[in-house]
Image (cartoon, rainbow, N blue to C red; front, side, top):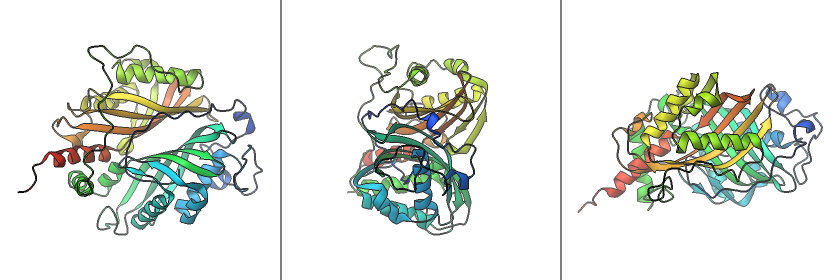
Length: 388
């Protein structure tokens, strides 16, 4: 991961190369069991072909973990100039940045607000190679204190912990496209801020800039009176476990077959979700899914990218970047929404699944409830009559 922003714009599905079959045998690093000094060791020889990459990087996981640490924790923000293309596009949950200078500026502003923040690599799931380009999905757990006035208002010194996932497309040492999903609502809650007032402030600023909606058009759940398709679109999958993942996601989210969760997840599965939720068991997972669907009952769930890696803990880890788009037509698990407003809401999320013995034992999902609330507030403000 290399930059954090608060914004969401859905984009077309990207075609990326399949993960090379030899990747695991090449001893590409994994972060789960390694201390940081071992993860970014200065004495480890290069273990993967990285044509065009800086000499300090030994493989693609080392690259994304090390450069993120240098930029964010060591404050070498200027490395963005050598690690991003000038015309990079960064999609977030509150908007899109279209050039490197905006990434530099945004990074500095976030460091201003959280000078003590540290980000720890939880895991990196990836595919690709140095010939056609790499794709990485980097889950980071960040913690710190709000000790300096910034975009959250007056500093109050309160601590916070939140998760961020950044998906990056990389070629010859440079990120040229990135999707960042940061759980900003978790930070807002932990800092003791009023989510309604904070979301309305952001929405008012965007409306003053001429932005009236953060959406991508009507949802495509149903055409005419047809039910959802029986089979998922598997065209972005690279192997069997990815195809199976796309199918059960379609069954659960689009076909509303929530009982499928009991088949796919282990009884002891852990769910690590938005707002730093830590839940256990299939019933808890089912409740979280129904809660989001309840708030957006007509939403369409669309995977945008999927990749997977064998895991040193056993089994396989799968990363899915997805978009949901529908209307706030019901009550659900997003408590900040309140009564149904009918407003269109778009969710960009990224999920990491750990399969062992054919079932999911851990899920990490990140989406930003604050972005969703801002979209509702923005639509309401845009509907309000202008002052005479």
